[in-house]
Image 1 (tube, rainbow, N blue to C red):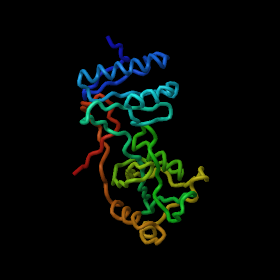
Image 2: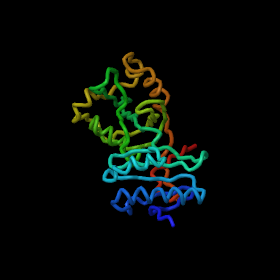
Image 3: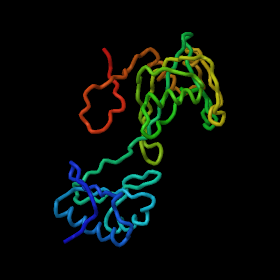
Image 4: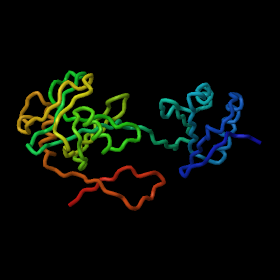
Length: 251
């Protein structure tokens, strides 16, 4: 009787190997994985998911030899899959990197803008940056504005989304433009390695500055007076995972 690796079944016909329960023996791993493949095929399963930690990295060639392929990788682990039929579907993660930009307008109708030190682009742009792993959009954009300009802000809503493909590592990029209300006025640049300059620029000056990228000018023109999608507190959560953020349009 085959003695397969410890595993769980998911609702999509998948088999998830419980890697934390594996023994430290490479021979036991290979034999258990062979047995699991046989059991899964007999049960007409679709996929086997195998996540190995950096300490289990020596087992990656074993899995590849048995028909597994790479799916995704993190700093301390790699996930491989084995497709057990031609119809097996594995959603790829991640498909996008996600960045944010902030439209911050003060009571003088001045726009908060910045220039970075590392880019060949010399025009002013909106402050913002990438989301960190597990970070909320609201948290990311207010954090980036504070880090780049020293301005404290309050998140108001999502104004627009732009996607590009391909960008980094063959993946798409999603740029989320948000409206923030300034809670302070004095600009303080602490990260001089990244930020060359930050300032409050009169709106008309920004919209007519030939050094500013045409898309940035078009974006601010279209969005500067919009309320956008507003944060909404969802009261009913059906999925097993935590609902990070919800944005709805308000008519």
